[in-house]
Length: 244
Length: 283
Ligand SMILES: C[S@@+](CC[C@H](N)C(=O)[O-])C[C@H]1O[C@@H](n2cnc3c(N)ncnc32)[C@H](O)[C@@H]1O
Image (cartoon, rainbow over all chains, first blue to last red; front, side, top):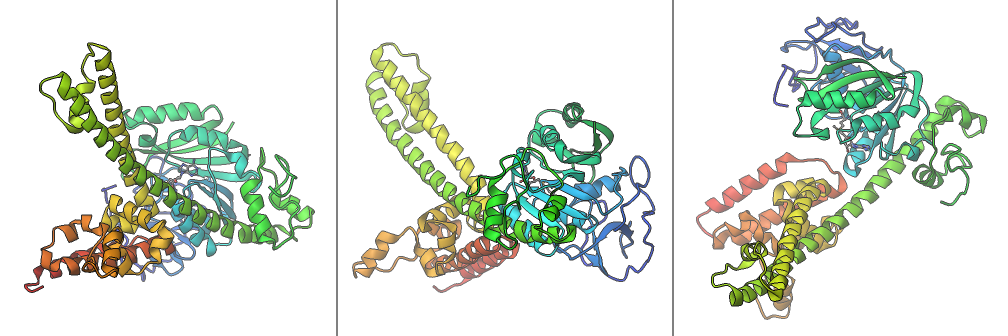
């Protein structure tokens, strides 16, 4: 992650004024132009920076720069933000119910919680869960669960059917995790998946790894759009899919 | 499981009194269901919550402490796994070396030139046995090699696990020293509660007892002697260096236990301290 698309956050906080709320984003972004942003997500201009940055509204979490109520949502720190920057339409309107698999310390989950109705955040490592709990303390719609995403039955008595699954587990068997959790997704729901090639296989070419993962994924999902997440995240593929 | 309801059926809240956080934790952690259901609606129907918003309040109130406590317990047990693995690493290394000596001695009676230590055992293991005695010798050598490999695997595991259990302590002391300190203290929690003067002499218990019985000077360092900041500091400054290192390691252990944040400043501060100590002209 040495690429710097010109957004190193420090100190570039306030007085960027520009009140445009609409996500018009002066798109220098990827494939399909500017995706529609959910309510509660916007682009903010930042003084002295080359382009606008995604932002959500909520209590700051990890020292991210803010602009009034808005916390900047840095694509280099979040694969979901990177998907927007790459022009994928995630099909989110805002206020969705979300199951987040691989929440880690809650960096991305906190932003998703800012614009969602509720977020069930599953993480199986103890240390990041400690931070995740701290983030959930301040967010009453974020429910942390210390659980293994490969065994959905261990949290299906807590998690309700959702509109969106976001998955960023970065371990081997990423397609299997998505398939196992399909039971949580409403028929018209969306899977937003970040696939890390190196988690599956460090020796094979990432493009081949992605193809294999997508092939497995198609057993239960229809893939709607994909994009490589460079330069924000090396060897990652962003995927949007719906259950079939 | 205290309740015998719900395997594969109801929601976590079933049969619970509102506000029974212990029961909630038990239910969240131990129950299961094959598939999700509209739990908010069911909770309202069951009278557990007045409406969806109220249900989410209850869910938040239940999931946050559950995840917090479960994570803390898991971390606790992670430090015990680290302790077992560093002890096993030491045992495997020591035993491999001991057996390698036996192999070398035996091999000396069979072949003219033979190396000693693990490389010697490796050479013997690669030979074709020519008689039943050779078979045993080569077999033993192969065990030595395998044990040495297990020791390396254990070291790799320790190096990874130490950073997860105690990131700041590991940054300052390196994974092996971090693991040894945790093992000597019996856990990260007990290490975090020790004053820095105690951490400084952990591993020098024998010297410390001798000192207490009036038979020796007080030890200036225990296992932290293995850190380059003590070992490679001139003898006359070693006591100060050990004190400075122990001070920072103590702070690191406390941050690791109580907050888990990473504090890169600690390392810079320690580097600067040691530089100043080493630059002093007088002891
Ligand atoms: C790349 S990190 C996620 C970062 C996070 N999504 C963010 O942007 O803030 C991947 C996380 O998935 C977790 N993870 C991996 N396998 C998992 C599993 N089977 N169940 C739950 N969590 C898992 C890891 O512990 C790690 O914290």
